[in-house]
Length: 496
Image (cartoon, rainbow, N blue to C red; front, side, top):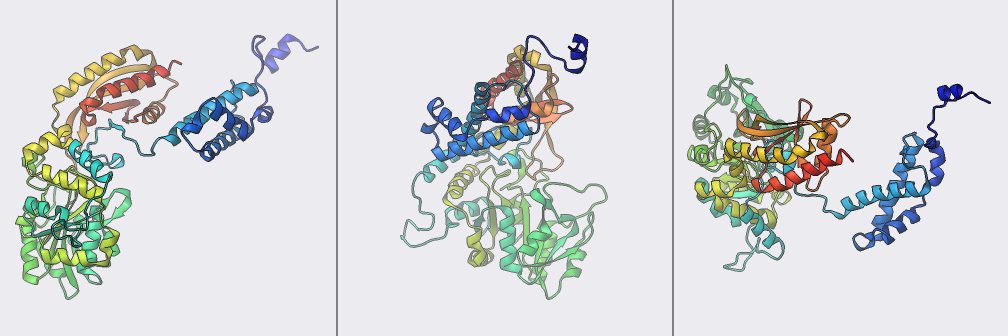
């Protein structure tokens, strides 16, 4: 008989708890797929929410995941019996089923401190624009029929007059994003010819898409002139030859070159284009329609109205940035050039649908009045919120979360800087107030941030020096109650 000391030293166990079984023995306890499916249907009532095939598919995946965990010796110590293992699998399956029953794209709370967060859809629509979009989506709309004559028309005509009114351009058209707008513009004007652009403006936008690649996709060649930090008008002129088709000026909307730097002002480039009969295309990117000061943005940001006034033949910009509308690529300028673009075969590949036109048209109507835009456009409301208001809201939230202090080491209100984001106003920040949640070990900042993202609705925050930072600059005031309840729930779950 082995001595107690030998047993304790070589095979420790607790007389009050059974030893953990060999994970391989638990494999025999895994239920067949049909048994888990029956449990989910009969006890969980999932047949009323999802098709039988979907339930079966998810049940099979859950069992397969459990089998892999057991085989890799990562068995759940609570799953020692057939019933406990079934309960565990049922819980996992119900989580997966709940996700499958929801639409894949859900509204979330943006607590990142980035107003135009590309990953979160950039600019939120104004409520009245969203309502109009929903109304148009639910029925039919004459997007290619002229209501007056009953004849076939162009989709762009729905917003053309508004865009011309707001920018002073002769004509306008719309594509599904600004990269598409640039690509089709060059395809229509510069196929098999050269586009002249400054080295300092060869931008890279999100997703590693680079301007030279967009130019090439448009069927044009590129002549880059000047240097990264200095380009003069002579650089453009020296590059002009019989193959030249377009003088392109691109606003570096996601970076800026400071110090020993020089670029060519738009009016000088327009004068050169007029001299050599070359169209000047100005890609301003961020989507301001008129001078930035009218909306409270820094004066360094270009706008369509000023560019058209300076003589640019075409001006390109986004709809979902500072304009505050849906994702779109907008082209305004000379009617003859717009007509060439709209007749290009590629136009059908980049055309917009009724939902975009519905949202964009109402957003443009709102932008007729800068004062009304400031009251109605969410992006402007968030940018103009006072720091004192943010501080008061933070105080109320921290007071609410004080009862969850055992789940976190500290809850602190901090002063921080928010960003415009979305490839706009590089280097410009907004003073903001945030709340730092420092989790108690073993919970990590990554794990806490993930729990917040997976909540309903998800809360997207930042991680800063070991804390999850909730920046209120990008949280709407009417979201505070939901934000407070979800964080409270997540932090309370830490103790269970």
